[in-house]
Amino acid sequence: MKPAVFLIVLLTLVGSGSVSGSRIFYQGAGSRASDFDGDGSVAFSDFLAFANRFGETDQTPEFDPAFDLDSDGSIGFGDFLQFASAFGTTGQPQLFPDYVLYVVDSGTSLIDVFELSTHLHQEFLPFRVPTGIVVSEDQQRVFVTEQFGLFVLDTDHRVLLSIPTVGPGRMALSADERTVYLGEQMNNLIRIVDLDLQNAIDTVQVGPGPSELDLSRDGRWLYTLNASDISVVDLSQPAEVLRIDVNGSPGAIEISPDGRTAYYTLVNRGAVGVLDLVTNHIVGEIALDARRANELKLSLGGDRLYVNADVSLLEIDTDRNLVVRSLRVGEATSALGLTPDGVWAYVGTLEPAIFRPVVAVVDLEAWEVVGRIQGLSFPLEIEFRQTTRPGN
Ligand SMILES: [Ca+2]
Ligand SMILES: [Ca+2]
Image (cartoon, rainbow, N blue to C red; front, side, top):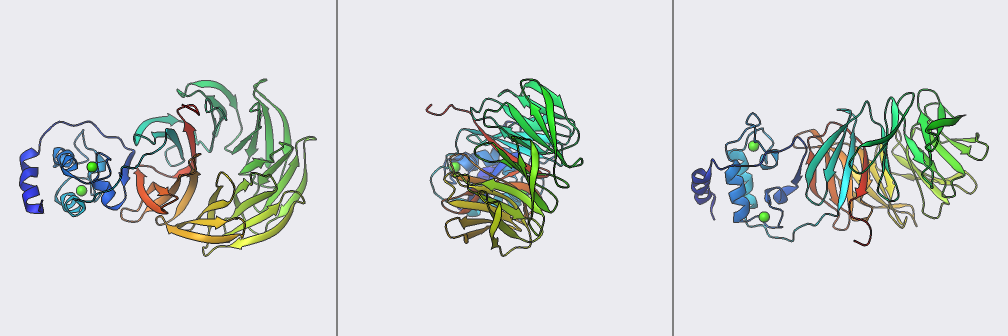
């Protein structure tokens, strides 16, 4: 159908009912944005859906920004032109797994809960400067750290337990999930919290400004990323036994599945450091074509490392320690999450066209941005929870 014919049909259809939208919404990238019913093709059913929305603005109560293709705050002719040029695109529907996505949004002090399979925003969890989120192995509990407390939530996000804390910080969870190690950035220490006792049982002094932290696979060693070094804490004492100078500001850390290697980003130098955990020696650095390296995540098997660097997501082959692919995702990068099935990356970034913070959704196999979650303020942390039990 030609745009002119379209427009006549469009003007005839304006004014039908609708379902109200949300501040947080998903929009496919490129022509996918016009596939409103998500069946993979931009066809007449999408046109009908679009026509129902034509004329709405962000001032009208039922405005759904997913139809505002040019993001100018109203669903009008500019959107129609974009839709018309996408019309006729065919493809397969993209099936997203049964996970709930949590985005710690430090700009709003909210944790946004978003369902991947339906692309629907579910709820906001209000916190006071949330900084960290971890989901339990059985996917039944959610641990959150914020300015004033450590919280344990159930899958309906009811608070099961809360323990007061001092200042914002990140956490690491022991393998038996009964102990939380909390970094207190302002106090240069780690607080060890026993969840059974619901209390802090010890503290360990570490280097200045501990932010990220991670545990060795055997649970004995804790690594904290400080302002300019990495502390190694022997939890059997517990005490800091070594401080490793990394010649830069470490930003995020990942430990390989075999437990022998840690990778950490150097935020101010655009590099990834490689630390041998058997000897605690830095064995190398992977130089990136970037000024900043932000978050990083290892693939399930550990053979690939994904890094948010400047405006791009990078893929590193960990056998050769080489960057093998680079994908521009926006104007900057922040948080990074990989779905546990290893198929998708969710990347906090700035959308170039509208210059607003979004989470870009990357198909890791096709290596392309397939869509964006919009309406966020500053994605600081990204976590997933499986909503169907394994085997179901
Ligand atoms: Ca469609
Ligand atoms: Ca528009």
